[in-house]
Length: 89
Image 1: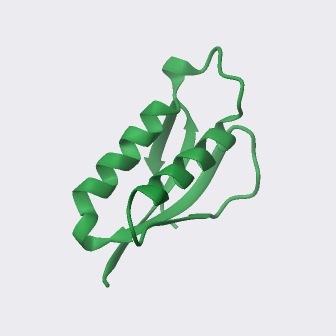
Image 2: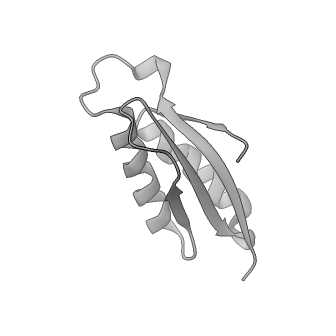
């Protein structure tokens, strides 16, 4: 099975920064766990050291899931008040 990998920095979305009780990295881990459960062959590998405000992770998914995988990752982030940006490895 061919896969695609991308690396992202996950942070708290500015619009929901107030009133959240969990740290951004805790919610980002939740995003990765939920997203990987949504599709077979998906994985999320944490690359950064623990930090309350952000998390860097590599996400991998089967090529045939392409658009669906990225769309679902976006939806999971929005639901938990997390923003993601691509980073170079």
